[in-house]
Length: 264
Length: 350
Image 1 (cartoon, chains in turn brown, purple):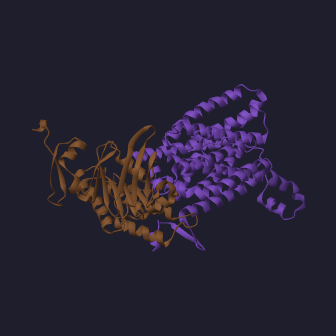
Image 2: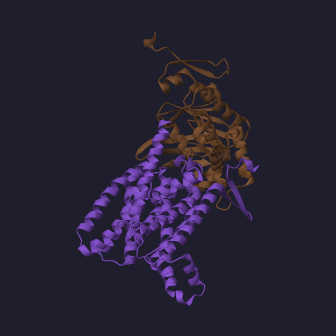
Image 3: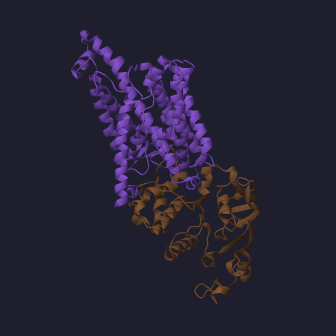
């Protein structure tokens, strides 16, 4: 059970500013790995570097046993999908047209549409429950529907690895849970490894099979949420005094911040 | 099963190859192409020496007295018509490329300033170096590419983003316009007069030799656009999404900047700057074809029709005198922009 995606001593940053230095992470196969940490701790930078959006200045990202930089870019896109924080939908595009663009890495100049494309698009839209929106214009959709369409596009790419950069941001609680349930179902269906950056600790603890906690460009703890999420860790990483109790619904750790002095 | 395909999408199978195309875009292209043929036929009959279509047909079916008619049609009028159409196609394609790259309907080469730069290059070769036609064409091409390089470098910040390209382009355009005016004002009167008459863009005095460079450029660039256009449409989704799908965002953008600049520069070299076609044609085509984002083929067709139609108007308005075609496209462009703004304002209100 080797890891499909490994960051091996990677150093990444923008221009002269180093965000992450010598970080090593092995994403467990078939896991739902969730990366959490305070703002500007480098979690999105790590995800972008895992998706070869940012080149590592030192160290290497290993995808399926080979350095990611050695692959042709379309070959990477057949193995690893990414849901970026922001994508742009061309004006007036229909849902199915947008989802079908996820097939790009499987297509070529002389192979612009195949039965496999069709099957992948139907499967992706079914899994994300957007099939009935197929001919609708993307502009008319609600925020929750739009995010599901972007996920469908990433799924249509049919990659065993799927990276999600803050997928639940800007969504209301109902749509957040809907999306997280979808990711959990995708993982349960088998054959997929998911890596997500999330903000909500309790959602991370409830949904993650493997939790990665980052602070100032380093990983300070990783493992099953129940094993690693402690009050000391949350205080150390986020500077929030809290109690950890058992989530009565899911029996995963539940972070309950302590009352601040001025509230007493 | 094909019910799932995007509405109006069709798949063409040739052996094992499959090509996807859009039914409405194809229909629009065909209708516009027919209009080009009709207006082109009309244009053949127009001029200081009016010739009827019957006379033209007769001159090609063995009427020995019609040698003069045949020469007027073949050597004077046909090259002009062909050049208007292919110049329009080139400008529209250039506009479509830049609007796609900048993801902005205002991101056309006339606004970003590439044709102003091409014009600067041409002016320098005419006024300073005293170059001939080929020299001018090379000058325009170099001017366009150098301008593009300057704008690209200034807009670069770990990658080039559409909005910044446009804003910096507008600034560079302003500077270049001043340079152009200065070049004309500070040169000999006869030379300046010739250069200035070229400022508005004109198809007067066009013969086959001036058609050739534009035709060759199109013959080289169109296949390249066809090969890379799928990458261009993926790039419209944003750089991150494009890279996640296996498209090299920066490399693709650079290829298209170069192709787009070549298209607009070669036309500027041949007939002078013709404004607003690059701006309007892709949006008109988008509106007609109801497509998502700009699409290249219908844009090219609309561009051809726009310039051909404008040239016919330019020839007729003050006949027997001729207006520069650039003046006509400029006026049409003004009307177009007003319409666009009015439409936007109404959309905002509702």
